[in-house]
Length: 287
Image 1 (tube, rainbow, N blue to C red):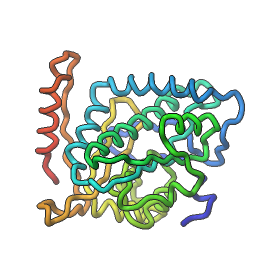
Image 2 (cartoon, rainbow, N blue to C red; image 1 turned 90 degrees about the horizontal axis):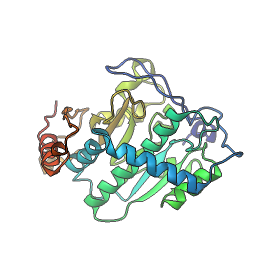
Image 3 (cartoon, one colour; image 1 turned 90 degrees about the vertical axis):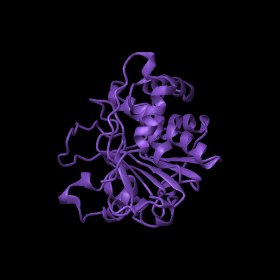
Image 4 (tube, one colour; image 1 turned 30 degrees about the horizontal axis):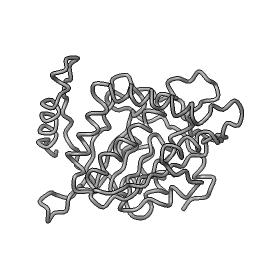
């Protein structure tokens, strides 16, 4: 494990070019961040804000339904997942009061995490315990998360919990945090910056465990709306089915993206549209 300084000095990074790369928002989990202690919103107000942001995110035409169908179609064999760890989501109450993009991104990441857990619980048939860790959390942040059913951990307990039965969710984290969390057993499912997105300059620096996962897991880009940076340079990795089950091992394979147009009309949002999306996802080829 790294020192406590490594684990707490989380930052959003600027990465080398990739098609459709978008500018990242300022990180809530930046270096030397300290929790806000004054003029805090109440946990109840944060919960109201979250419900509004989540409804807006779920109503978007692409991201949420695409994420649900990806989990259904590609993680159906991950029946042993029993916990989900979310690192570095950031404060839900930025102290400048004006960082609306950052606040929206933070709530979107929380919503996506909860949606993935909901879909995984359908697969596992049991309760998945959820844990959060971030040095930027204020007292209100912690109470808000606890009120909606999550457990908040002190650094570095969350980092140390990741194992083969874990969903590890961490968007735009500092490289050593990824490396430390992936130091032992690789998680069943991972959401975060892919090995390819770090670029050659970082290939051998505090990222070897991400590379280890990249070489043996399946991967696809995290679904996101156009001009939305909440999940920029973010990928989903999952442990492939065993060879005995008929699927090949990972070896850096990438799931081909399927673009699905969803129109404003209700006919595209009904059951027929969802069934068509599942069929397309299940029929995706592996490059």
